[in-house]
Length: 115
Length: 108
Image 1 (cartoon, chains in turn red, yellow):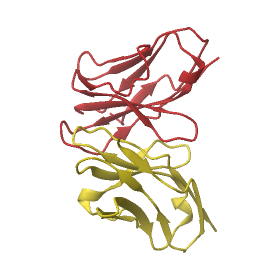
Image 2 (cartoon, one colour; image 1 turned 120 degrees about the horizontal axis):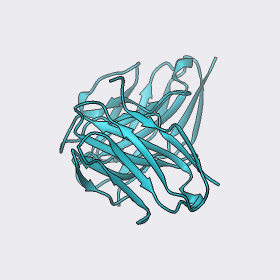
Image 3 (cartoon, rainbow over the protein chains, first blue to last red; image 1 turned 45 degrees about the vertical axis):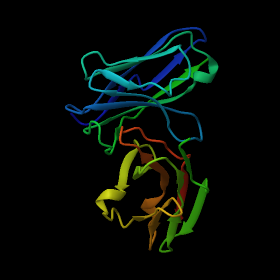
Image 4 (cartoon, chains in turn red, orange; image 1 turned 30 degrees about the vertical axis):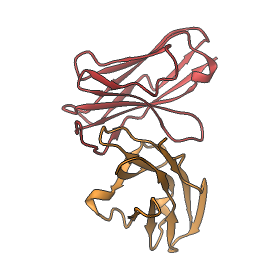
């Protein structure tokens, strides 16, 4: 594939609604990461998968945030009962590496706006 | 706690001038160090990684373990270097901590 693909590119939701953001990593990439980027700040780590296993979810801000990667490829980040502070760009990245640190390949992100 | 500091939010230089983007980190262990760049209307992409010791687009980055710094340098800036630059140490688990970025503007 051409690279990491994220959908939708833009999402507008009313406060209290649930949203689901999708990430298609580069084929064969073992690691998958989700980041949240607020305006004027760098990406903040949310969670990390190695294949289908979620190895680190320490960055998820609350139990309203849930991520899965059931077959070790496509991943979904779900946010329940959205709040205005959830408005941000959500970035997905994948890496060929497993346990060893390697460069990450980023998608274009999903810009989420909560009204 | 792991922390990355990029002290300059904005940096402006003239074309042909040297440029240095600063990065200081506070990390346990020995992280792998990366610089990422985001050009206007493009996605975040890898610029260089310390371990490869490459020079990409004329940029180099020197690791100073004593000062825990990983500053990005280029001797002669070009207009096409105008972009947002992020320093990102990465642990063995692959998790990256990003700085808040420096917006570089190279003026003609």
